[in-house]
Image 1 (spheres, rainbow, N blue to C red):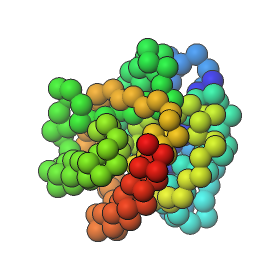
Image 2 (cartoon, one colour; image 1 turned 135 degrees about the horizontal axis):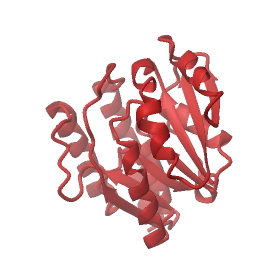
Image 3 (cartoon, helix red, strand yellow; image 1 turned 180 degrees about the vertical axis):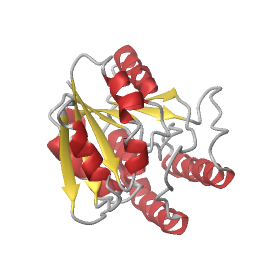
Image 4 (cartoon, rainbow, N blue to C red; image 1 turned 120 degrees about the vertical axis):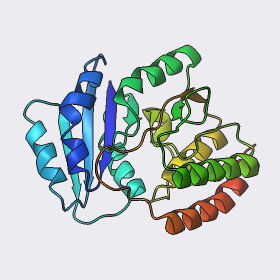
Length: 234
């Protein structure tokens, strides 16, 4: 079974698109559950998710206040019962139609983590705002060069994880940097990482929750910590 973990913070308009975008794609899976983590939303996101529960297999977890993507993911991981955990952001900037690409890659390479990467192959993320594209490329390059991990998508949230590997990790991050921490931890423990090219589009509704200054500082702190960890275990 695949547990689909979706962190949500003030994404009401995008969540309302789930019946047209997410749910049809999930019907292609043999067995799945949806774990939606409402991370302190105040725009009605939680109410929309509750409205889906009658027709969909949704576990709804709520935080009384916003704690960050990392905290939301850790809550979702703890509640997941599947053999695999798929993470997809509620803003749908990664297409649910590409879930099958991650699954096919895992089956082909017996991977423990498969990441959807907008920086591989010919699928250019031209719809992404220029500043975000530049910062994302720069941060991923910095992770790759300092950790020496051959991976292009340290910051991507769109991933498939083997649950048994994930549950044994000591995850510290509470912010967006959790994705880079998980990639480095999997590598440091000798687990198999794979990537597949996917398109990262611009959001259709709502505003990005990224605070660039805060996230850059968080990534720099994480790079310092994880570089030592990866090299100690390499």
